[in-house]
Length: 240
Image 1 (cartoon, rainbow, N blue to C red):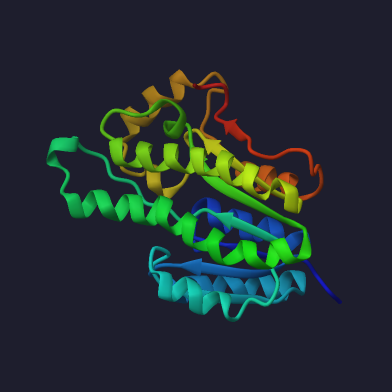
Image 2: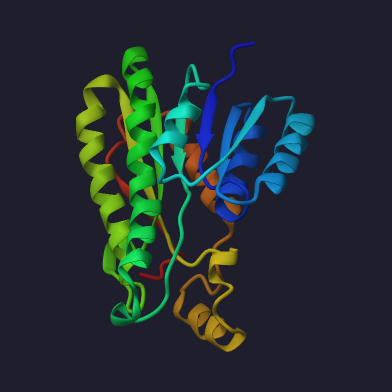
């Protein structure tokens, strides 16, 4: 059986893990990456294989390292979907941020997206089909105080999405981004209960988003509509 194949970066937890589970349920064979949680990712992949009767391969390396991305793609003969989800944040004043910390955020969030796309699109172009979904943030649209590097990386991802969509449109490859609001993941555990309560009060939907909701939207973007491309789709409960 020739099942569709998807690569999902940052799949060991949170949004990436939810996306992996959703695509496995839909019958995709998976390639999953993480940076440090190799054991957890391998256990999760075995669960998916057993539950949904799909094939799953795991890779553990920094997504910003080209050698790791290149080596991974040597083992990926064909790819239908690429989901760029791997990302890190930094909360603090710009004046207190080191250049090394700045580079780590930009290299991971934006550089990793560049690398996976660079190696994925060659095969997609030859087959005249493919879907690329970039997991972005509302801060890429409007910016956030104390999160300048993160906002810059996601703003760059949004522009990258629009530009690459135009470049790949003639090859029938669609490129879209999901700009997430506050999703209930480990990345937001830095806020205490009082801060989180105040944040929820700002959101018209009166709750945090669920990783599964991001995952469902990502799958919908891959299940048809070849005229939808170059879009930054906001998923934030009406917040921004």
